[in-house]
Image (cartoon, rainbow, N blue to C red; front, side):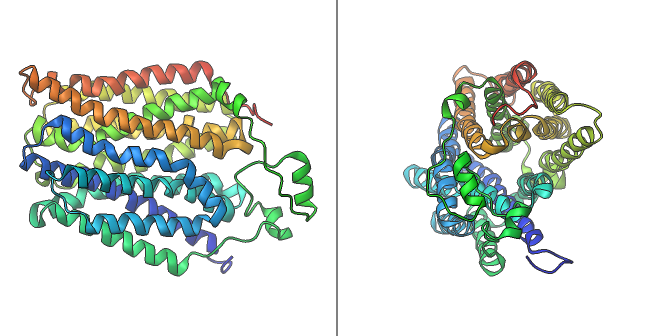
Length: 442
C-alpha cells in the first residue's frame, strides 16, 4: 500500500485525476482545432455538428462494456489500453475537414476508447480507496475533467494560431502517451479482496452486488461462482432513479453544448478569436473545478453536522445549482461582449458543477449496493445528451442561416442556450419532486 507517509492509493487517485484532465483536454482541443479548420474550409454548421457529435456515439456504446471489461481483466489494464488507443488515433489521423469519413471513424474510435475510461476509474477507486475516503477521492478525480477543460481553453488556441490545428492532435497524443507511461510505471493491481485486512477495510470489493448466500460464502473464505442478481425492473421503474437520470441528461446537455459550441460562438457570434482572449477563456471550466469541490464540501458539512437531512441537502444543492445555471444560460446570448459571455458561461457551468453534489452523489444514497449500475445508466443518458445537444445545435444554427439570420445576432443563438436553460428548470423540478436521500434498495 506504499509508505505510511504517502500511501500508494494516494498516488493512484492522483494519477486518475491527471487521467480525467487529459481526457478533457482532448475533448476541448478537438472542438477548438476542428472549429478553426472547418471555418477556414467554410464547412456549414450542420456538418460541424455531425462531426462534433460523432464522439458521443462511440462513447455511449462502450460505457457498459467498459465496466464489464474492467471487472474481467482489471481497471488498470483497461485504462492503459484505452489511453493507448485514443492517443494513437489522435497522432495518426489528419485534421482535414473535407475528409469527413476519416474524421467520423476517428472520432468514433476516440469515443469508444474514452468510454472505457470512467467505468475503469470507478473500478480502480473502489478497489484501492477505503470507504471513508471514497467521496473525496471521487470528487477530486472527477474535478480533473474541469481543470483539463480550462487548461485546454487556455493553451490550445495558441497552438492553433502558431502551429496550425493539426498540432493540437499531436499535443494531445503526446499527453496521452506520457500519462500511459506514468500509469504503466507506477500503477499496480489493488490489494486482493480475499485478504482479511483488505476485506475489513473495504478494499477490492466488487462493484456488483452478491446474493446473500454468496456473500456469506465469500466472507467465510469460500469463493462463489454464482451470478449476482441485479433488480433491473425495480431500477428501471424507480422514480428516484429517473430523477437522477433526467438531471444527468440535462447536466451533460448543457456541458457538451458549451464545450463544443462556445468556441464557435466566440468566433462567429462575437467576431473575436480565442487567441485574443488570453487566460480569461479558461474561466468557465476553472469555475467548474472550484465549484465542484465546494459543492462536495458543503454537502458533507450539512450532512455530518446534521444541519440538513441527506434528502434536503441533495435537493437544496441540486435546485440552487440548476436554477442559477438556467438563468445564466438564457441570458448568455444577450451579453454581446467577451467579458459578459465569459461571466454567463462561468456562472452557468460553475453552478451546474455545484448541482452535482445533488444528483451525481444521490445514487450512492439510494442504492449503495447498485451504485455502479445506476451510475452506468445515468451516464449513458448523459452521453445521449451529447449526441442530441451537439448535433441539434448545429442544425439550429444552420436553420438560422437559412432564415437569413446573421450568426452575430442574439436571435440566432437564443434557442441554442434557451433549450439547456429550460431543461435545467424542468430537471430541478423533477429532482425536487421525485428524489430522496433515503436508501430504497437493499
